[in-house]
Image 1 (spheres, one colour):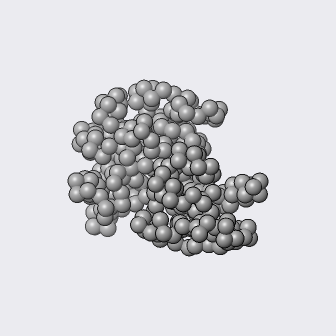
Image 2 (tube, one colour):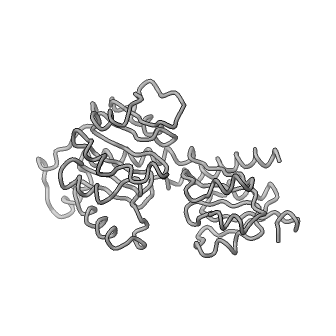
Image 3 (cartoon, helix red, strand yellow):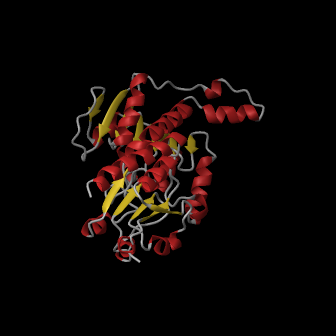
Length: 319
């Protein structure tokens, strides 16, 4: 039954959220359907009658699913990346869509910086060797970040947060983002993709997944690199073509790689070829792979929830 017609305002919570959001929605008169561990096949049934939904990546709010739920009025996305929502269909139906990229951008930036420093200083591999009783100093001579050129592909919330953290390391920062109209900070140079491919010592991806960013790092990108780079990807797995990444590591054009995401993730659901490649690369001393946790800090859960509540309060308060 339609939530408005029944007089009962319901919202589906289809993602882990902080109590600041659930308590705020309850104060606005919503009844909550709590399904933070929702399975994809449960979405249709649980969404019935709901005026709103809070989601992350667990369900796909497709055109078909939106058509089956004409009572839906708004969607709140925990984090960034609207690829899980058919925004075109939502706009056609007058469904408001809100994301909260400002809520976890610092968490992602800190994770990217931690991975970059760990690779340059050879911290994970040398610590592992010590655990095996090996005390190798010369073999683990690291590099300093100071003086290097870091190229950022994408300069939205996370790219800007990463640049802010890099500001204390006396690095040269290049950023390429043809979509942003915002001014760049003084310590960041607006650059073309070609300039980054020629000058960068580090290349870090901070882009959403779209048709033009799918396999952004591909054979052509690898070929265009003029010197060995450290490659970071904390955006979406499909941005980096893993097969090409492996070739780059073997050839030496990729000096090291840090990835918080992987195409076809999570690991148990990957095609066998992808799973084998991930496990193979994870054994390398020059590769760090984490299980999509960059934006998953305890603080980020609160910040994303608070951001969504503020946006929903403003929207719903205006009718």
